Image 1 (cartoon, rainbow, N blue to C red):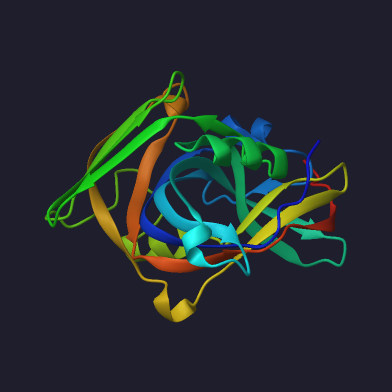
Image 2 (cartoon, helix red, strand yellow):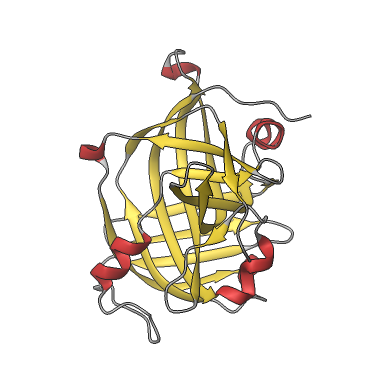
Length: 243
């Protein structure tokens, strides 16, 4: 039985966001009828986050009582139209991996983030970052070279890297289905003044979960450490998509 988690405070200590484009037709079947894909020139977009979090605890508790863990999540950029006519944009979780058993169990009881156990390691220095995700069915590794300027990949629907980064910047809300005419939204709050990120060059990456899907890396950006608040979820009536 699912319960609604309380508002959670914590800190993102390290974070890299990989965005992949894919034909919208290849992923449309992964969404509930209450959600629609964000598309550009027929492409939809995966947002794969790899991050290390600390002091994760219910709001009101001191940081020393919080948990630390590493998290990898595969999300799609989506929208939903409320019954009042406004648009909600956010990320729909397809799969998560984490290296803390308690987070896995409680996360699957309280969210639709679809947690799986994994061993996750990040190694970095001034010049490079590497990551290894060990999982029975979603192994992954990546290497970021901070000494090489990032650039658009061939076939991008965007004219410049800056345009792609603006369009595909992280949307601070998780959206999942909550019945045939409603969605559940977990909004994220952060101090805009401390939200700092920059595109980086990916020297290599391999994601088993995406191996059988037609994807192409669009861009990757790393996020500076930042304090976050994950609000308690709320249910919002929406209009099912025409498709």
